[in-house]
Image 1 (spheres, rainbow, N blue to C red):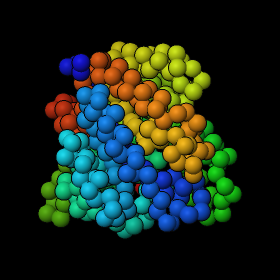
Image 2 (image 1 turned 90 degrees about the vertical axis):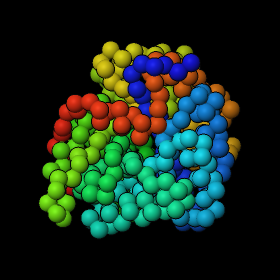
Image 3 (image 1 turned 30 degrees about the vertical axis):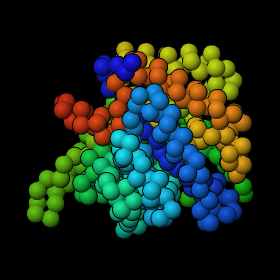
Image 4 (image 1 turned 90 degrees about the horizontal axis):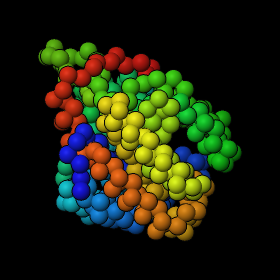
Length: 332
């Protein structure tokens, strides 16, 4: 039974096979291999079996392809929200010049609306890419919330693992990826929702509404990840450890008044059997059936402690409160 207590938001970053291959530097990504017709129905079924709805962040390039349109229309039909995850899933998105960055957001916005019939209200940068310029573009174009910040100290460790597992990259590719997953200082960012104080005005001189930020939640105090992919990584070592870690995370969130934003990824639902090209990812040697059982278990536990809703609904609830304001400190 779902809780009527504090909110938690649930989201899925629907990264496609080609986007992971591109970031990893693998040949063949530009033929756009896709597992979406396998992954998305599985993800929707598991989430709905737990009695929940979520926000699905779509990549514009996938929404542009007509082969995905009927699949993507299932998302709003089944009561879920759609969000913008950029046009080309560049994890160095925040480093693009203003015009290219704006095009990444607006192209994806247009293709997602065409594919789903719903305009996205929220944005998450691929690889948690974020910058002051990106936030300002979102606010200027009427976005209600961003959820690209990931308050953790472990970004450099994730980046080190990435470079160890990737093929040999060119100097240009290495430079693009040199600050993937952020820095240690990201661990000092807030865990709870707040407003970005962007101090912007439109062409008529009227103030533009401040953008709401909903961070991807990490463990209070330690700031280690609590998203599903990390929980599956722990479950490989010990399901008992995963369960105790999750219980600790939920308890600390409740004690500190943090309303979790819980994140899912496509590889939480499949294994290397279904996608040989991505076997290098952690937990891809876990059977997909077991993964889905664990996702269901985690979502069920979360819904016993929190009122789990899509991110847009969580954003609406947050805007009813007196939220702190924060000046961007993300670089341009």
